[in-house]
Structures are given as structure tokens and as C-alpha cells.
Length: 111
Image 1 (tube, helix red, strand yellow):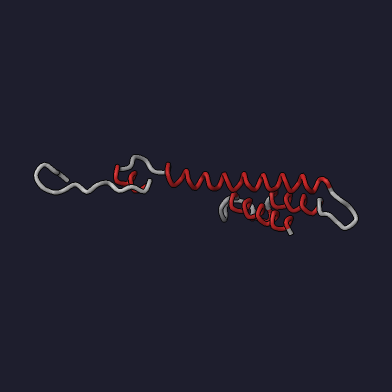
Image 2: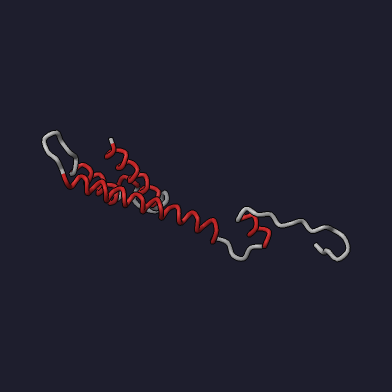
């Protein structure tokens, strides 16, 4: 069951990293999809053999899945915090969870 969960997670991350709809080959026709399935099928363990390469495959697959997840999260954070140009002090304070103090109205305080 761990192999199936790992394969599904890896394919999900590959699908998220792929081009958008209409910009390239469909998900199931991509080279990455066919390669991942081919490797998992090649290294399946039957009741008659112990496959040392299977453990190496699981380690490589989990490492690669972690890399794909980290790249996706990094891009999301980069877009959130660096996608805009110059920001006002009020926007910057809200971005980090702070509030600017309210300035009282009256003489000497211009808005």
C-alpha cells in the first residue's frame, strides 16, 4: 500500500507542475507520467523475490516528491510576497500581520 500511495502522490505533484490546459501534451501522455508508472511496475515485489532496487526506488521517489512539493510551495510564496512592485507602508504592515497606529485628526495631522 505504501508504494501505491507514493506513486499517486508523485503523479499528483507531476500533474501540478505540468503545463496548463491547452499548452502541451495531456497529463497521461507526458513522458514523466509514463516513466513513473514504468518504474513502479518494473520494481514491484512478488511473493517469490526480494527486490533491493525497490527500496532504492521508494527512497528516490519520496525524495523527488518532496522536491516537487517544495518547489510548488516556494513558487506560491514567491508570488504572494514578491509579485507586486512598490507597496505602501499600510500594505506591508498587513502582509506581516501588523496594524499601523491610527493618527488622530486635528491640527498638524494631514491625511
